[in-house]
Image (spheres, rainbow, N blue to C red):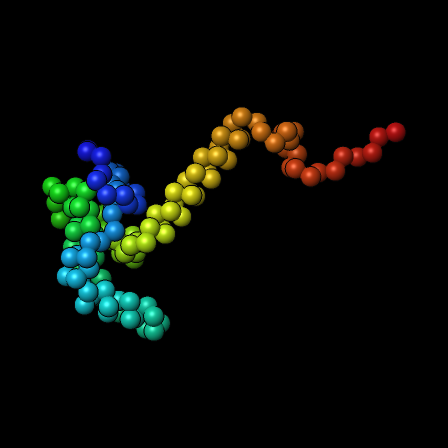
Length: 138
């Protein structure tokens, strides 16, 4: 798979991890009515129909095709479900890059913790947390 042209958020669909860039202005324009409807429902705390979320497949496909022009709609449709539809929509709307930055920071912190743990940093004895007082000896 070629390197992505546009920065984005990792999105795994069917075992393949793609870089999902934010929506282009053209994509936002074509999905504006559906996005406004869903955003309005979220803002007011009201509900929306399941049918209101069906546009997310095409919305995500348009975003993914910025990096993967040959990606097929069927591949995207098969792997967006009720478990991830809202997350995928929010990823597509990550215009400021805040979500992407948060995910990158979390991954970096986890990697640093793993590295520190593997290197035995911190000087703690096995099973003894930092700051544990030792018993006085005489």
